[in-house]
Image (cartoon, rainbow, N blue to C red):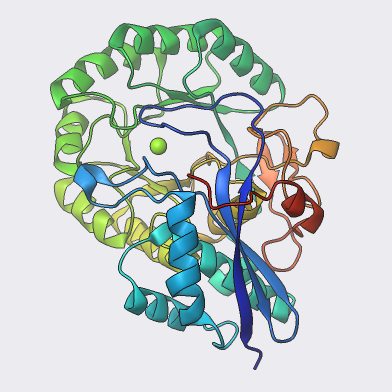
Length: 389
Ligand SMILES: [Mg+2]
């Protein structure tokens, strides 16, 4: 059996289409770390750590990972730990990575995604076949508008709906009056048929405050309210007092967190990532625990570049619990973009071909590995000299 011959990190930065912000974010999206793995047979695979230093779990439970931290953790610990191991033995890769250093799920996910890509390309199959197959081959896209001003938010929502988007995520958690007014204006702009959800990114100070604000938003129709406050137990208080379903994201990193969410009845919905639990295998485990409890999921992330976003699609295709529209970019290289903006956060991307958005959903790419080839020229063009901040 083939072996993993080399693993390298490539710090990169993609140019953004517009500034994309949420409550708590202190740095630009798109300055991330790619992982390039090669087997002794010359099969290549790619992974990504969309590491953000200000993105962590509740009450300091999981730390932020910056590109520089990710780079050091992979180069010093994870790459040596998995070098020489058998291609396709992902379970052993996790055991080795978890044994050599605690935590750092984003760094571990980046390595694991590259290993999955190598394994699937070695076999000539898509990654989802290694996850149990696909339960869906179109992934509905939720377009996230970030913290924009009213006029720009309304303009962008109208445009993406015209491009086929059926679900819009509104970033809130800033100021009650602004947040309620934003939901009201967007509902008015897009009409009654479009699904709206809000994500406060833990921005409301107390459960009581969150309940007051959300009750004022509920008349405009919300399919869910995401992470209104910090903490599972505090979110449970909110969930008991409002009508809209609650989604947890910052409080839901892995299968263990989901067990606590089930015990406390804090949420009906969990936001699955490939990165928070430390890779696809553990994301499938998290999804399975959700499914056992009747919790439904979407797939979300940190506005990954195409490399990490391909893995998001593989997860969304393979996890039965991932029934909801996903907050995944429509990763599109500059040459293929035209003037479209639906699901597009970057002005260029690393993929050799664009993802296809049809009727508001991405068609699951059917190529081997992660489904679309990475363009090495684009990687070279956006490579940073250092590990970044
Ligand atoms: Mg979120």
